[in-house]
Amino acid sequence: MQPFVFEPWSWRDPAATSNPDTAHIADADRDDAARTDNQTGTDLAGADLLAGYHVEATDGSIGKIDEATYDVGNAYLVVDTGPWIFGRKVLLPAGTVVRVDHDDNKVHVDRTKAQIKDSPEYDKDTFNTPAYREQVGTYYTGSYRDTPPTN
Image 1: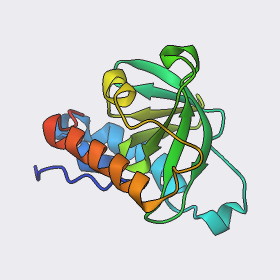
Image 2 (image 1 turned 135 degrees about the vertical axis):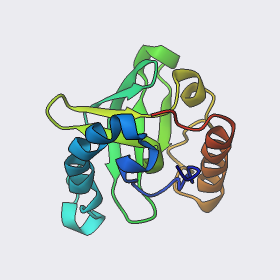
Image 3 (image 1 turned 180 degrees about the vertical axis):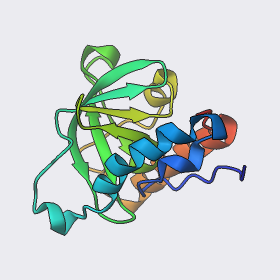
Image 4 (image 1 turned 30 degrees about the horizontal axis):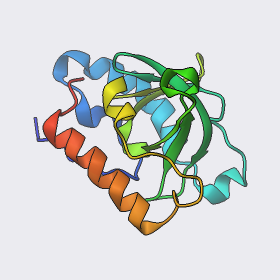
């Protein structure tokens, strides 16, 4: 198995983190990922297909998606954590997503609640700036270096 390379702002192939024992799960999920991967900002024409979906970290629910973008190389989710971390919103790079379950309206990410809680604070005024994107990308890249995905 090749080492995992994290690309923060791109949707990833679920098979990239699969081991042979779970390959059949990744294959089944590839259809969901492909549906999301093939949608660009222009294809969606403003529609936010994942808004309202619940987000599941490796150790439990973290909130609901407020908004998402599917722009190639610039994709992310804004998640409202509700009372879990005092109503704070977090920005999750698309690269953290391992599976989208359209039947249950859930998005699964491969980071823990603590890793997400410790991420740079979301600021609606600066989240789209290169400096903020670099800060978030660096944080999550470090989290993958320190704790590679296990699934």
